[in-house]
Amino acid sequence: MLRSSTRRTTVKTRILGNHQQMLRIDREDTHDLDQKEAGKLCDKVMSIIDQEPIRVIILQDYNKGVLTEWVIKRILNGAKQKGIFTAVDPKKANFFAFEGVNLFKPNLKEVRESTPFPVTPDEASLQKASDFLREKLGNQFTMLTLSEKGLFLDDGTGGKCFPTTPRNISDVSGAGDTVISIAAMGLGAGLDLETVALLSNMAGGQVCESPGVVPVNRARLEKELANTNM
Image (tube, rainbow, N blue to C red; front, side, top):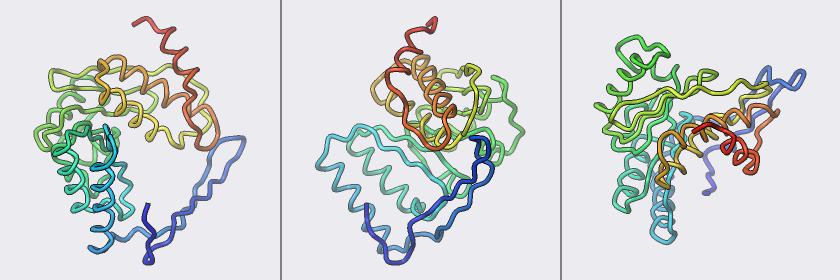
């Protein structure tokens, strides 16, 4: 982490009713890092990957100004030189800046906003979108999250839809972060696609059952996985 004198720390205020989030108010700065700050951030990242046994880097883009196109490219290039698995959860502004990333994980809304053709949550349409993204980015894996419908995961040899299990949803805060964290760790560790998809769906659904941002319960996740018919 680096301290900046040109921007404030983001503060999010969530308004809840009956244990469900109704509204969120953000107080923040979203302008791009200047080149001096961007350089300091990248130097810090490069220093860490030089000194620590890093196996996975996740770029979680919210278009808040930290992940500029220059920062994205420098971090991805540095990771590639070290053989580090990279994953990204993109947003619209830099959607096609993540060339060469291993795992590209947009949601359905983001894909629809970024492809020149309509995309529907059926396997054939999602495969067409995945092929389009791989042609543009050269990514290894594509994961398209579909909210309550689960996710689509493609390793370049043909993708598949993995439905989620019904749950009592309380708060979706942190669901996307949870899914990409589990998926990136699983793929980085060499797990098969079906196990990665199952774990990602389960973990993402689990955190939605509790209000606020909560961690994944490892014991519960292991139990749910053991009870599936793989």
